[in-house]
Amino acid sequence: MTMIRVLLLTVVVCGLACAAGRVDPSTLDQKVLFGYQGWFDCPRKGAARGYSHWARGVPSAETLVIAMYPDLSEFDPADLCAVPGMTIGTKPAYLFSARNANVVRRHFQWMKDYGLDGVFVQRFIGGTARNQAEGDIVLRNVMAVAAETGRGFAIEYDISGGKEATFARQLQDDWRYLVDTVKVTAHPNYLHHQGKPVLSV
Image 1 (cartoon, helix red, strand yellow):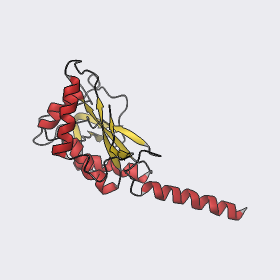
Image 2 (cartoon, rainbow, N blue to C red):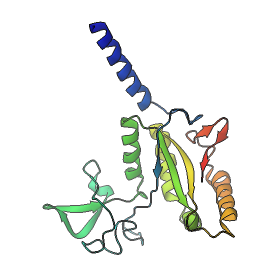
Image 3 (cartoon, rainbow, N blue to C red):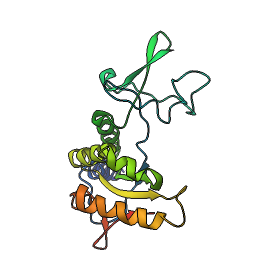
Image 4 (cartoon, helix red, strand yellow):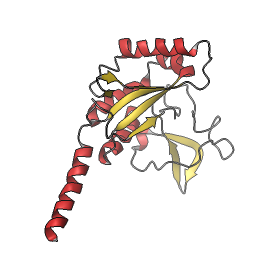
């Protein structure tokens, strides 16, 4: 009986250790993947963007659009945005931006810690031109921390809101840009399956 317990414990520990190691990007088999929208933003020094997807304008009880407040206790306050006039108890309230590489690094470290394999980086078809013009900051953050943490990633397009006459061309043009300019599929952690790069639409 004791031997069985030791064997089961060994299997569980080995399973967790294997999951936390580097992900095999050559297959989708036995992967747990998440959609990574990366659309949350907040004002930082020199940044013109507002509280994207947190609130309509400056956050307040009337303008917040989130269902619940995130637990930010594991983040360095220097990587967050203090929200004017809002507190949690007696402490300042903060929000995060996925345009900050340290925020994305924390998200990917959690995936590594809990044996989760990676993400589909979501791109809205209507936002591809803006993403390109801004240097694809969130995607480049993902690429950097995927390499650091050994997580996998692939591109996923959301075509809702696309125009029937133009969305296919937009998708093709953006995919060429990602492959030729950003070189996503050449990244060692880009997910492949049966020898081909993964792309979700």
